[in-house]
Amino acid sequence: MIWLCGDTHGTLDLQKVEDYYENLSCYQEVSKNDYLIILGDVGVCWDGGINDAYVISCLQNLPCTVLWLDGNHENFDIIEEYPVVSNWNGGKVQFIAQDVIHLMRGQVYELDGKSFFVFGGGNSIDKQWRTPGVSWWENEMPSEQEYEEGLQNLEKLDYTVDYVLTHTCPGHIAHMLVSDVYSGEEELQNYFDDISQKVDFVGWYFGHWHMDWMEGEYQCLWDDIVAL
Image 1 (tube, rainbow, N blue to C red):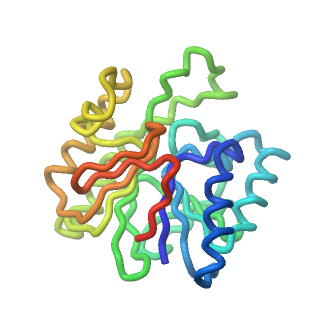
Image 2: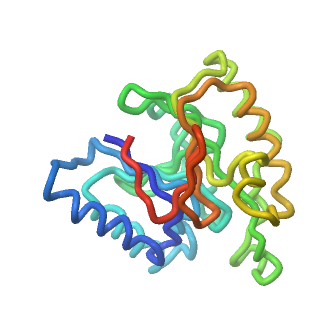
């Protein structure tokens, strides 16, 4: 089984996940062979110390394996310190801890017989109040290499996957969600617009916007947790 949820921000918004599995355990068996995928702003890599250790412990205490893609509020200096495993279920990953695995930008994974194109990153609208290298990192937005690798991986699959998982969303979807679209994120949103036109997919899930919303194949997750 695979579940998806929106931003958890360390332990700040993790209670929704803990409550979900506590209630779910009454009805079905969950194991580490099942996956929860958190759609960015996870905060599992933030201070490199006691805070991170506690978040990792909370995630490991969940009955399933936790997979996550990066959002904009992550410590990318710490993330980059972890070694890259080149072929985990078809794509590159970083093992933050046992059962806590970072899904990297532009990769395609095969999980439970389904294919997932994953691409994290986003823009922080509050970065003017944050400190570079301490609470904000420029590489919250993707590099040209990551953009290109994502397109190359999709091309190998004839632009066909079951699901697209991102932190933010295509620009045309962002304009449906809010009247004042995040300035500074246009490049990434335009990239996703292009992918939405090229790729044949069943569903596109994302977080970032702190709302629960669905329109056609697109779904934004915040409090809701979705089982695929």
